[in-house]
Image 1 (cartoon, each protein chain N blue to C red):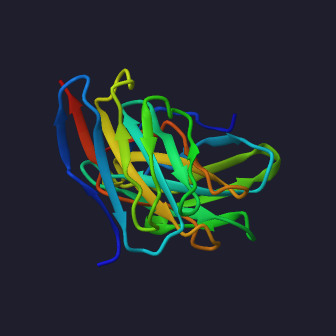
Image 2: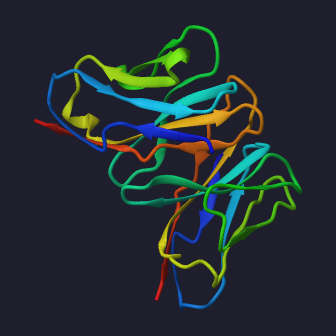
Image 3: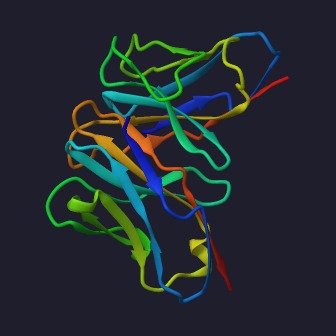
Length: 114
Length: 113
């Protein structure tokens, strides 16, 4: 099946630890995105990548880091510098070419930092 | 900075009522526009999209949206809502210059049976 896989679905970490969220897509999409979804805040863009080996900060990049070494993969690291890391994280991809430019989403990872 | 504004955070309607959810964006360049829906406990899914051509676009489940370029708006409409339309609706804008996609804060729609 073609799609976006985020793992794990639920993740618990102790405060002060870095944690990496996985996102893999087999849609052959060029662009990939990370969002954070909080109640009443909608989806806020953390990082996005148009192509391999290139990525840009979104609106709330502080305390996060990403890499894009392969087209299929766009892992997100939540560092200890992120002040409020507990949230629902969504990964998405897009082929970036009209008419099919919409983002396709994974099932999300719920991160809880205790 | 670019932004997307959704006017209503929470809307409550009775079945068969008409729906219009507002969406405005701030960006002067070329964009693609989307409405997504998130049903309780489910993934985000695309309702409809606009990238060029006819500014009135039709989507799934009887939804439509109109792009008014002069007003930077992309309002979502449905003539007669059903209880199953209860969900959260998100407007999104993709900047053609760099594929950045930004979302509004969402509108929670609650349909009374």
